[in-house]
Image (tube, rainbow, N blue to C red; front, side, top):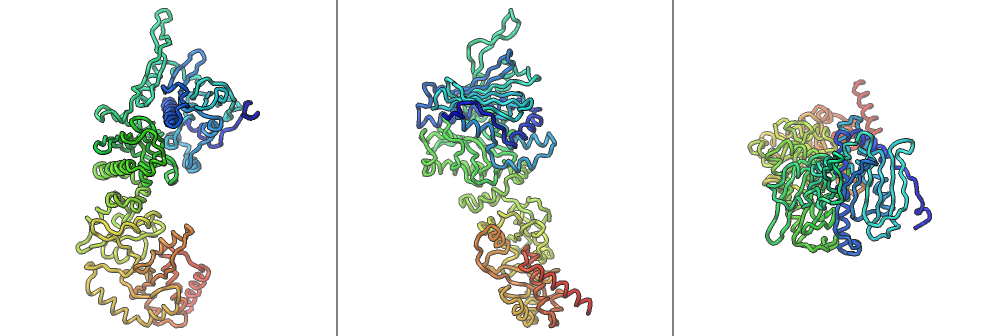
Amino acid sequence: MSVEQKSAQTLNFQAEVKQLLHLMIHSLYSNREIFLRELVSNASDACDKLRFEALENAALYGGDSELKIRVGFDKGTRTLTIADNGIGMSRDEVVTNLGTIAKSGTKEFFGKLTGDQKKDAHLIGQFGVGFYSAFIVADKVTVRTRRAGLGADEAVLWECAMTGETAGEYTITPVDKAERGTEITLHLREDQDDLLSGWKLRSIIRKYSDHILQPIVMKKEEWNDEQKDQVVTDEDETVNKANALWARAKSDISDEEYTEFYKHVGHDYEEPLAWTHSRVEGRHEYTQLLYVPAHAPFDLWDRNARHGVKLYVRRVFIMDDAEKLMPLYLRFVRGVVDSSDLPLNVSREILQESKDIDTLRAGCTKKVLGLLEDLAENQKDKYTTFWKEFGKVLKEGIGEDQANKAKIAGLLRFASTQLDTAEESVSLADYIGRMKEGQDKIYFVTADTFNAAKNSPHLEIFRKKGIEVLLLSDRVDEWVVGHLTEFDGKPLVSVAKGGLDLGSLEDEAEKAAVEKETGELKDLLDKMKDSLGDKVKEVRVTHRLTDSPACLVADEHDMGMNLARLMKAAGQDVPLSKPILEINPTHPVVLRLKYESAQFEDWAAVLFDQALLAEGGTLDDPASFVKRINQLMLAMNAG
């Protein structure tokens, strides 16, 4: 230990922590009891982590393998203490865990705060309150901790008061501590005396922490006739049930118990949206209790973020984030899986190769997708909430999980021309149910934004004929349609790729008209192709336009133009492919071009550039486009 570490050191909270503490103390005060739930939950995690590390190094127990959490109070000093004999913390871990918010999404979190206490309370709950909730009821907090495996003289005392000029500063001092583990002492605020009561503390523990696996012990209290008060004795009693909630029969567990367990396992302030609890028996035996949260965490889009499902083996905690138990597109799921088959000394490396884990993963995935199907069918409001929070993540599964692709496809929701709003509420089954007689394809258009999709010129003939088109504007939608080529036997077809084939929805007279106009305009088409040169693969007559003079389409087997733009923006190489320019033979601008000679090249270039802009593309040379438009307007005025 260095000289610097031997002496006390004063440090400052990360700026975000100060802001969070201030908001939390004021916004969450109405539900102040959660501080005890959070601190007991952290103590339980510390015990779980010791049990896991001790699987490989039993010496960490140091002769004390009976893990427990102790809660006590002292009316004289007005203090409340939560202690555990779990893993404990080293000095560096104290700085990391108590001085900073080690969580991605911090910036977005503070960006969303409104100043409205009620709304902010929900946000803070999503962010996770943890240790800092102590300051809801305490104006000074003291933490004494020693990590398992370190000497008694390597313990640390962390102290912080949230009053006076030093608010937001904390000190770290090396101390001696005979036992491993962490002891948190809360010096209560003036108005918190009701917490200095054994009855009150027991009721909070039973309300929020009854499911905690380790025993939560308190000193027994007995009535003293002389003092006319409850007196604390030296005898311990266990306050909680201290058994695995998931191991109990479903009929014995109330919704409140399920909800409180979720808040513990999901480190969430709010109630879950839904859950599934089942025991699987047979060749593989395991129990799963899995939850779908009501709100997305701030680091949902960090695919490397550590979350999720805790793995137990015969009720012994093994690891916190068994990512192999849940595919990435279900990374929002929280809960526990308890296996009867895996060895107790299982490691992450063993999990990578384990066939048993593959079976657990398949079973968990199937259960969650079944739960979502049930919500979609029977609790539509809840499914709407789910889709708004997690829909984009679920879409990733279309390309990642071939075995469940059909199930996931059935759960997808899209915007469409049926409502013409950005609300994603149309399922593929809904779409098929509304198909026009003779329609055999599911039509879609992709674009950068909803408005670009909604106003795409490619939709003109579809709107005229009343054919529904899915409007896809999420970045992940290109990934979806790249992997989902059909649903329920109906192919998914882009309205902006290849020649337009409406099958029996198109009458013979329309087909004949296009052929006739193609013949009549052959010279114009050739002339435009020569004028535009390498910009286009082909110029042809179309019947997909009713109002616009021209549009760009990708050839049947070329990459769609929106996907090409997305890949280019992501810095990826894009295969070189030229678009096809399709012109509307009845539009006045096209008819004018038939007889234009002096400014033909300008008109052709403007038509192409307009079509590119309508497609959502960007011009190589915007200045030249503006110059041409001005020249053509001047020429028309002069005419």
